Every structure is written in C-alpha cells, then in structure tokens.
Length: 149
Image (cartoon, rainbow, N blue to C red; front, side):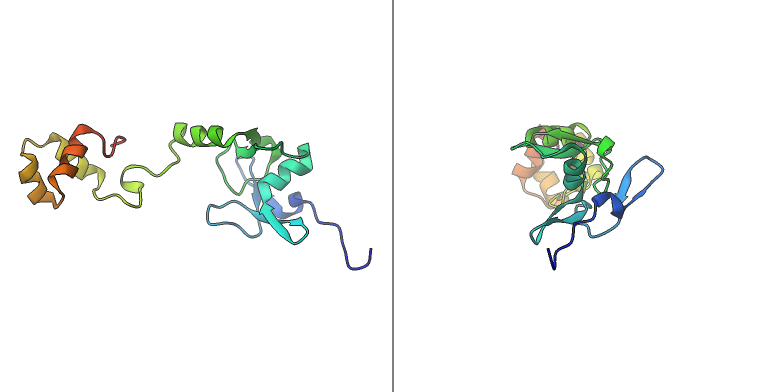
C-alpha cells in the first residue's frame, strides 16, 4: 500500500552489554523501560514487543517480566511471562521497592529509626527531641513503621 511501511524489528534498536542484556537505544519511560511503536499510531513497551516478535502474543492477563531486572533490556532470553501478582512478589523478594529511607515519604533516616528503637527515653521525651508525635514514636518502636530498618 502506498504511504505505509513495515515496522522495523525492535531488535534493530538495541545494543548488547557485558551482562547479556540487549539495551533499548531509543525512547524510554521514567522507569527505564523502552518505548516503541506497536502500529496504528500506538506505543508500547519495547520488552513486551520483543516478546511478541520472538514468542507470539501475550496471553490475556499476563505481563512480560524481566529475569535480569534491567528495564531497558529486550533480550527474549531475559524475559518471562507472569501475572501482575508474580511481578509484585518478584519485586518484593528482590527488594527493588522503595523502603526505609529510600521511600519518598520517609520522615527519618535509618540511623534515626535505630536510635529511636534503642533509646531508653520516654516517648514524650523522644517526641520533643526528634520532632515527631508520641504516637509516631510508638509506632516506630512497635515496628508498624519502617519494618525493614
């Protein structure tokens, strides 16, 4: 047809690295995942398109996940199918989520949390010293805040 052209393979836009990853060289999301055209003026994630090119359609309700934990990687050998729950479980098992002082809403550094838990001061005294409510101090000491510290 006039005015149309076949889409290039996603594999034409990657560069191998020393770990065996095939790193996407074009646009990326903030998360690091590659973005590519999937036809019809739509865009999608490059690793998902790589899976489709190599293995066929992704079954309904399944996600394309990375074994290598490298978002721009599109090497089909590093990809696997799983549910969103499996994706979350994998993230938690590998501690890739933001926890402790890496979390954007954290109030205290890990050292401060350890100090609060080890302190013999009362919750009222600690509240004055560190600038947090007594309730928050109690939650830290109980372990309901900052479980990973």
